[in-house]
Length: 85
Image (cartoon, rainbow, N blue to C red):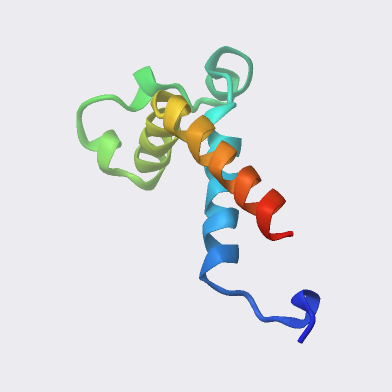
């Protein structure tokens, strides 16, 4: 069976989640988030932090603090792709 005809597996899902984490990690607060009202200061504390918007902003900031593990995971994924492909 050719690799292109396989259905989506766990590995593909993990790669997709890593790509999403990379996209969230590179968002700049000053250029992108704050002008659109997605600043961490706007939702920190209170009931707004529990809203969906507050949860998404928390996720964005969590991925920005985890940049070093993301770099390591990206390097591992690249090495696995080079060896297996």
